[in-house]
Image (tube, rainbow, N blue to C red; front, side, top):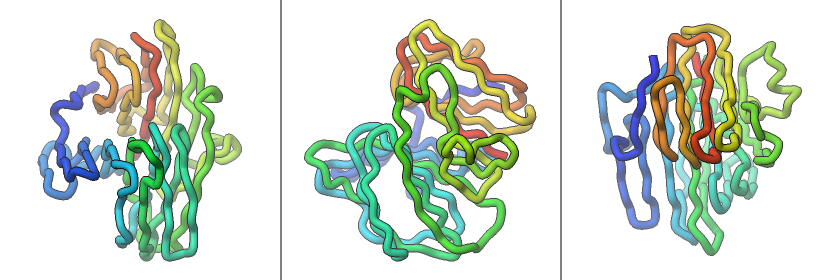
Length: 237
């Protein structure tokens, strides 16, 4: 199954400082057909105005992955962590038993990012945070694991940030006319693909930048770039 979810069909809320689009039900947006995709619970497409951001607030029992597309985001939390994550890079927060954090755009220009929430395999656990650079040039022509809780696939050795879920977040850059392929462990996995930039084709489905493609019941997924494209893919149970 391959289902296109056009950007124009997503839930949306513009708060002035924050222009948010929701691939899944979130806050004031509820669509019973788009509550989650397997363990993937949230995929928010956020644009944050300069000098603004999310003030300190709590989370628990969620794996929260932030993929910065443009600009940078500055993180502070109740564990004493502080860090600035730039475009193309990734940060992960395992909320565990509970954590409070803030996320601010301290830059002079707009920051855009994908915020991805994945339901953990088990509740509780010590909260944690980490960030890492993932140069776009090192993801050319292949999916590279950015965050992963899947064992036995070598993701940790490749530098993927750890999460506490049977899931992985991957990134790739693909030149126009080229194809990149991904093989899930089984056809029963829930895959969700979003081009951060560019236009792609999966099977008979064409998607433009920021559209979502929900995929399941496939042993192999081939993505053809119709334009130079930057891809983010979640593989979840």
